[in-house]
Image (cartoon, rainbow, N blue to C red):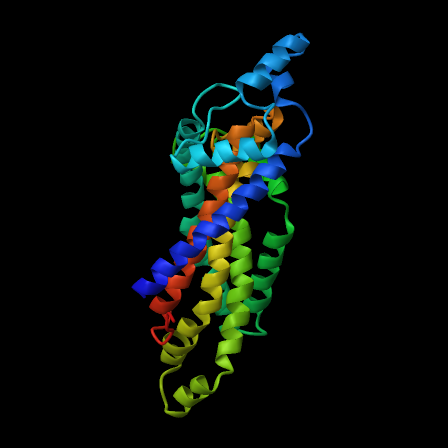
Length: 306
């Protein structure tokens, strides 16, 4: 397992290099001129050119990319064009808010989604199965921005139970966590049901029943445990999307996290901040996929890391 872990870590190096190239090229294909945005609408041509020269925007793209990678390897993501603050400090100052939001969604959504999916599989064709799948489909179909606005209207405006924005206390996390976790819950409910039904048709499950084992033992010691392999894969992908998916939630609820920072940076054509955020989002995807691969061996020790 240790050898496999080291190999996977080494595989992330060329992957992140390729991602950095795509991110860099994508940023420079965005319309607009960051130098003009930084200088202001009343700036002269000379002032705009001076800003381009100061920030290295006149250099060829290959030179700009080389300088960016050289600084990145030292842990330097550059300075924000908007505030001149180091991008690393800027991201770290927003990181805690996004992590709180992500954890609030992860705490309840996976457990509820897996529970609904497994119970729907056990009670296939019954009222619980129908209701659970309708709930899951509704959770998948409802756009996040619409759900957020409806929650604000009902629980913040009409009832006054919860705050409509900010991140001052645990009460401020309730509505955003519902928006963040609803999609995960719905996806996991559907995949858990289908994975559980597929596992229940396996020969070893029929063998366990033929041996006279209790139905609860068959369901949870045999079927449920083995059905988790597919579910963990989907869970990893969904959690990986939470950081980047926080853009909508943080904008709706006025939370000063990394998603909100990304929106502001794009509007201002802040190349260094956008690049830094996209690299962070990409890195967390890679690390979560690595963690998912390692969890396979924990769930099923028969899996070999060859």
